[in-house]
Every structure is written in structure tokens, then in C-alpha cells.
Amino acid sequence: MRLEYTGSGNSKENAIYFNNASTFIDHIEMEREYIKQKNIKITNLRSFGEVTDKYLYDVYETSKGNIWFKVPNNIIE
Image 1 (cartoon, helix red, strand yellow):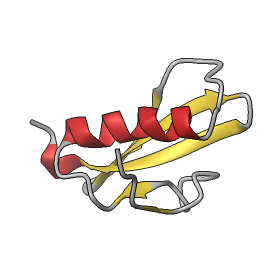
Image 2 (cartoon, rainbow, N blue to C red):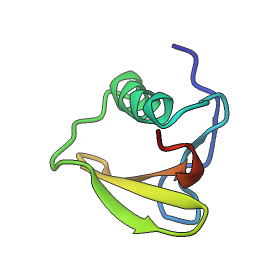
Image 3 (cartoon, helix red, strand yellow):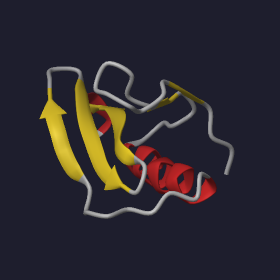
Image 4 (cartoon, rainbow, N blue to C red):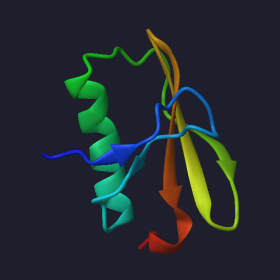
């Protein structure tokens, strides 16, 4: 899976956003693939960091600190 993204994931302001995802499921699968490719160990389940009018923010607690992902909330289907 090819991951095209912006952001570092170290905060809400720098949340990772997958440019080539077209559905909510794509974003979730790409989050998992990113974590797998970076060899990051998840220490706690995914949680919602925040919900805004435009985005949902997923936060994973990991061995390398929290990683934030940004998902458009208008593509939930």
C-alpha cells in the first residue's frame, strides 16, 4: 500500500493526513499500515482525540509517544 501523507503526527496541529485516501476505511487502513511500516508498537487502543466540523482526530498511544491522525469527517460511510 502506497502511503502519501502530510504531517509528522506529533500533535493535533501536525496530525498525519493521508492525501490518497478516499474513504473513512482507507484512512483507518492507512493508519494501521503507517504504524506497521514504521515498526511502532501500540501501547493502548486508538482513541478520538477530538472531533471538529471538518475532521476527526485519531490518537494512538505508542512506544514512541502519541501519534495523531486527521480524518475528514465528511467521508464516514
